[in-house]
Figure (cartoon, rainbow, N blue to C red):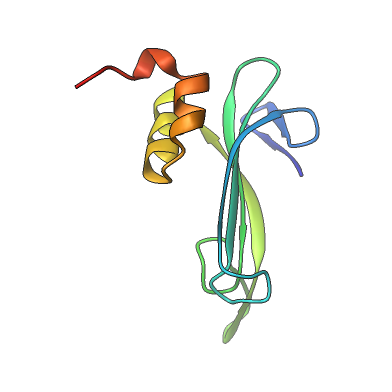
Length: 103
């Protein structure tokens, strides 16, 4: 997917995928698939898609929705928070070692 946001191009074909999260099955209304990416210039973004009953759902008319997808630009802090929330410890240690300290 490719999307231009605030004059910046985000392209899943040219960016590096850092981590993935999936919930459910593609035929499910609550299915969610998210991938965290880093562009060649170092910007982060989330590509998300999901069923009609997710945050990615798109209203078709007054009484129905369908699945959809989008790209959301992320700051470094948002990328770290997304990785923590989804339990992606290996990706955190690999890509953001400076954001981690021993307790």
